[in-house]
Image 1 (cartoon, rainbow, N blue to C red):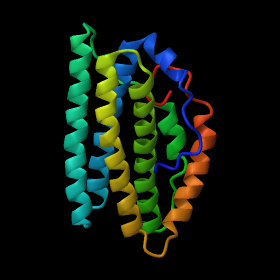
Image 2: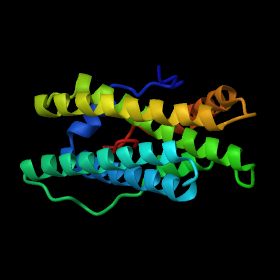
Image 3: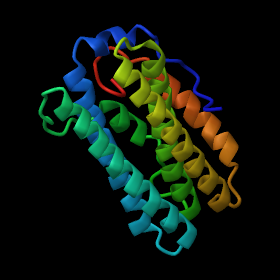
Image 4: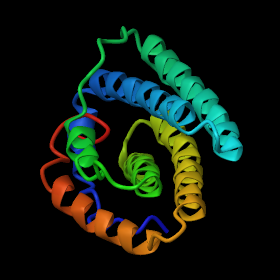
Length: 193
């Protein structure tokens, strides 16, 4: 369904299990950044009422997820660390066209959001299947479903608002680009790392 060209090596979970505090802190900040991205889409494209309405829902879900992850941090006696940079997202954002048409830039921003949700969904699936911690196994299974729904939402809007653009071809090219980037990751205890 997600179309990702390169799967996460399940051994990544071995790295994650060595520092649960770090994966949870990084995950919390990923949820905050996802909410911020949805707010940015609302601010930049207020004329698309259906997009705005869906982004409001996503913002609420992402902030709720932030709170859920924060609860996991507290339950384990940890403290939420400072916000982390996400080099994967930094590399991914380079794919968004600069100076393209209104529709091209909107489509790229929506595909960018879809890609992050797709990779997060895939990582959460790996965690839900491979992590030894039963509580986190269930937690990540539930969040995986939400990420898949967000992915579908962003792809749907890209197709809707990409009139005159071959959105499927653009998505396929983005998947190829992401496959090259992701080769550099999967070695640290972060969601995309």
